[in-house]
Image (tube, rainbow, N blue to C red):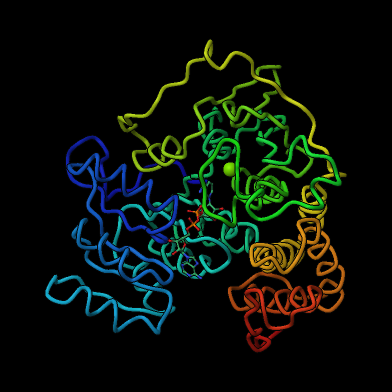
Length: 417
Ligand code: NAD
Ligand code: MG
């Protein structure tokens, strides 16, 4: 990971940092907007994107005097244009508009779209060679090798926004330090940490959406309940910090106060602590290499009382085991895992499948898809999208609902495979 600051912004109060937010209407996007609005002299909003909420996107674009607003849903272009008429804010809708938003010259791009849908715009943004604050962990899960090689090729700077990865980043003595023995990410354990297998089998979406510590978008909240989120984060850390998979592990820490620990070769362990509030790692990435004054509640360790840690139970939470296996396997496996998980989570949220079917469907999809995709590696965007599309089709078939639950048709097999 490149650590030097981007030339366009000074971050020390002189000049404005030009910021674009991909996924501005989501939880991370809204927290980013809040921090920017608290620091109007430090940040200038360039481009904002959303999936389909034209009204919310237009309101944000007007409030922040953005230069450009883009919706993913091409059918809503007319509505967005009407909403922004007379404001002087340019806009568009559809995949090309998201790319245009990402390509607008910016000093920092907050990549906060959820899922593999964020990959193409985030890649387009980092190809500016600018700083990308990466919340969208699925980018690194479905295309980690490609993503990191593009970061290097374009001289971009990648700043992790995920709280655990921000914690690791802050705890590293140097990027790519040779002295790191291992990295431990903490996990809250989610709402079902103390539930029995039988109780988990009957869990409903409303139970899974009640996260004990964090307030997040629906997909990551379900991922936190299955512990798939921690598995995705191990894969994310593998690519971000250039360590071996056997140097990475996860530990349950129900209080979510310590976010990650870096173990050094001399026995020292550096950990980062803060209250579970995403505005802290977002503020860090927005201001880096400076820090932002964030008017947030401060950690009071005496009030917290005790901090506890326990091993994750991979038999009640098999998604974590699956993600670890996929991390070791590499190749197309992480891309398939990510796509199958997106389909299965959506099916669970639609009440089409039970909670344990999420991990089971991912496992079945992996075994079916891996044989058919032997030799197809996620080395270009076309290849990633091909594997992703095939895995979505297989996952939908596995779930007994072909063509439903977020399945996108697989793009034609790219030439040269
Ligand atoms: P969210 O669901 O609240 O917001 C997602 C954003 O992406 C919205 O702006 C939405 O309009 C947009 N979007 C959704 N589907 C899209 C599509 N197909 N094309 C284009 N845009 C689309 O999600 P979130 O909780 O803000 O999470 C965003 C990302 O950050 C995820 O990858 C998540 O794993 C990661 N993350 C979130 C948190 C958190 O606390 N929320 C913490 C760590 C990491
Ligand atoms: Mg996290």
